Image 1 (tube, one colour):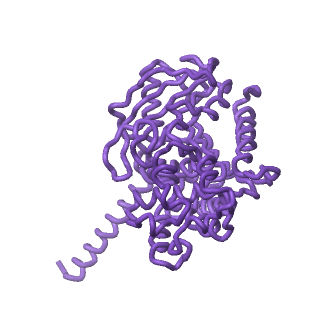
Image 2 (tube, one colour):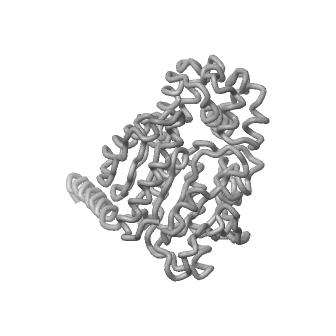
Image 3 (cartoon, rainbow, N blue to C red):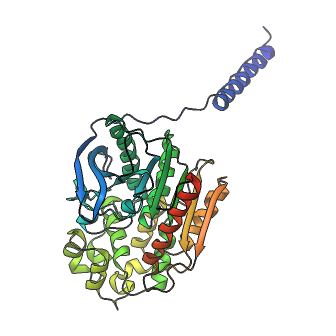
Length: 396
């Protein structure tokens, strides 16, 4: 055959292969699938005096630790007396807010939000997260969105399996909720599901006042230099230094009064956030607690920190599913997590083609010194109102 004809045929064949390969990718997308859950089990049924109307099933489930090794994490499945095995309206994945005390995790009985869902007809799944419950002897992965999202998704998959085995029909409705650190985790869950092509679909994700962009949060907190609220920033630095491999020594990170109390105030998990801030000192500013290198954004230490923050930034670098339905809540006067986190996330999601996004903003908590915490009360009320409107259930 003529060499020119040979080359023409080869090119034609190549184009045909590319054409059909492209058609196959569009016409036959990879079907979302969830990994099998092996080894999850219910530890026992627990009732607490302060939440006497809640039934709680503490459970263990397989996941991975921050280094990618297998680990058994813990969580709680909670439901009110209105829920039976046949009438649950659906499941809520509840990602808890910032906690520092070992006894403040869900499996140890800290069930404020779970109790507020009592009467809704929903079953609430609450992972403890790494560093609490079954892994309380380890440091916590505070504000590490990837690790915490992994723990939450694995908890949800395990809880669905355990509920099915126990004979519960929990319906199709699935809601993803979190405030503060929990909001960061909730959006991290969406990223995890998208990146791993999981068959998990939420009717709505409700995220309030989360630190979605830790780089911007860090810059603003240093610039604001507020007094009496340093525990959050210190805890973020401790987590990323340990699990992201920064390799900084405590003297390279902190000054007194924090430097000599990292172990007893933070790592011991004996104290809550407010207690730690009181021990640091109500008049002590964040810049009083951090070493000079971490106050200089151009220093080698700060640049390494920013690099690991950017690797976990929820406002860039991933492709959200365009059919997600998301409500973003944030107080305009938030004194702990800068409001800009929500505007950055909103802009990113919109740019990526997510159309069903609602922004709930206002000067929530403005009358209180700790506006971030008090704004959470409005967040809870607005969340309950949405449940009533969407599902047609009476106020509870």
